[in-house]
Length: 385
Ligand code: SAH
Image (tube, rainbow, N blue to C red; front, side, top):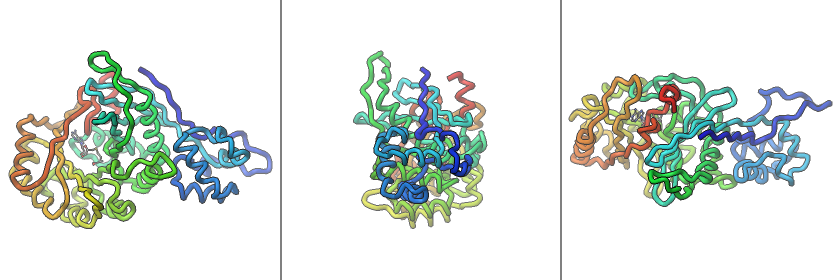
């Protein structure tokens, strides 16, 4: 199936008008990438007035129409349009797995492509696995995206547009099940920043995208339904903790119990050792019944030894954190082996014996390369999907 949905949220600016300074591309801002306060400030600056901020924000983020369609804006629509540039995000392909997982291939204005994955949940809901970068600079050796290197970071508007494409797609689509019966429509209620890229690498962008997506004037995702996963960039983690006060869920990709092993599989671990990560997590506020998530990709023979599990138990002590075990998902060219179910269960049991709460993540979307760590456009193309 080929779907084409463009989100030219704002109109292309019209030809320059006499007496007005010509605005170059660089001067123009991406309107859907402005959090509410930023938008209000810009509107003030452009002579439209802060008073219009609610109307414009709602129009862009709830109704998602072009500015010229917001009747009540009148002449302001033109002024705003002249100062802003459109965000282009096209849904160019979707791939469905038999387990209901749907992978969306999205193309940006410059041809850059990213993937977002819709994961069906109980009670007619979807979780969206959101990408923040094209490729990734973190170079974790077990990750397909990491093997691509970083091509570029998505703009705030592109992250937001990705979510809107998925929201619209989820509410429109009635995927066909194994038995050719149309499946019920689902609503997209949860976001996990676990797609391509490191969300805390260009932290401000992720911060602004989160602000927009959580804003009460906009689509208003519930903070507790949003999770940001990081390789462990300490300074950005601290800012994230401060900015969101633990309301947005935090997941740390732990993946080893010793610095030695962690450094072997995650280059960033050389910069931020486990002791510093733990200190940072201890300072992370956890309101209500929130818990931290420690992700652990099971790599047999590498991070499932007694020494590693002892290290994980030591790390988890004093933290309100649960370990989420992810069986390694192989991808073309990867040099690791997938664990057997017994091997994953042995890690699960080993951690539980040490008093560490943990669960095994069900791998979904695997047959169509939509599973954790498999998101890489190269792989997508090679498989002819
Ligand atoms: N950059 C973020 C988000 C990455 S993707 C981070 O590192 O946390 C989300 C999770 O999938 C991370 O825990 C990541 O380490 C894991 N992952 C990456 N490659 C994988 C693979 N091949 N199999 C299983 N999990 C993988």
